[in-house]
Image (cartoon, rainbow, N blue to C red):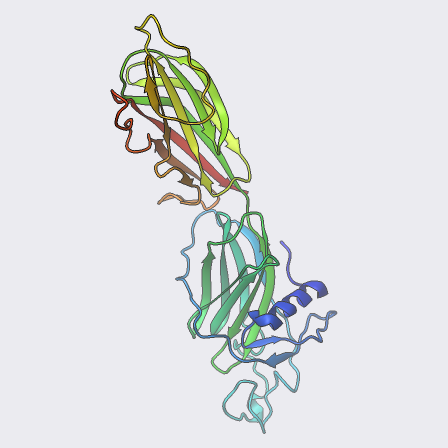
Length: 352
């Protein structure tokens, strides 16, 4: 993971801030790159209409993909030291010399204690913690135009937000700010890269529900529109047609997966039947000695990011599905006797 500790990284963060990404305080352009210290200048507060999701509950397999490094500042007389004749930056009342230095957990020094980006599939859950009650903001953005800002209520010590609209294998900047009740603000900067979605698909049989006649089956399958399997003369055993052990893997796959398993049924009781060529795409129909249909995910596709309830990992889980014929496992009207089947499928999804 890479933190915003280089001058270039800090410059990028400042530019983003200047264009409206930042909050109630920003970095000065005159950064002390040797010590990592910054001077701060007050800006107008961030808009109040930001949204916060409830803090995410800790789950197993919290894979860290990046972090936010709290900005380290050294106090100076004009900013972090409180004089007896004036008010603190953002404060409301004068302070005497006994309060000249804010040495407690407030945000005049650095109240952000940690910021971590955890993998949530191809998304990220950013968790920012402070050592004092504060209003916390988190912003995530990149050079491709993505920008999202969230905030907590006042008086919180943690903000956790699941950014579920990120792209896989993509670099993002992140920043956090926390403002205490006296108006002091601390910042942190960092980045993370989202994971890549991979999939492993397994199926081995078709379950026959209805068929117009007896005979062997030819099977063809398409995964993401590409033919992945083609075998002939599959013989029914009870209600099951073994169609071979099919294991297929795809890397860096899109969120929605398509799979079609096509069966062509031949009527072996007839002596004279026309020959049929190969099918280039899934189809449904019936003619003379043949009936054909295909099964697919309900709705036509599978959402790979639809993590099953009870899964204890954010980076690996299995989705069990049953492929069915479009329209409810039956041929459309006018095709004679029905030909219906389903195909149990296991889909293992991993994020790396």
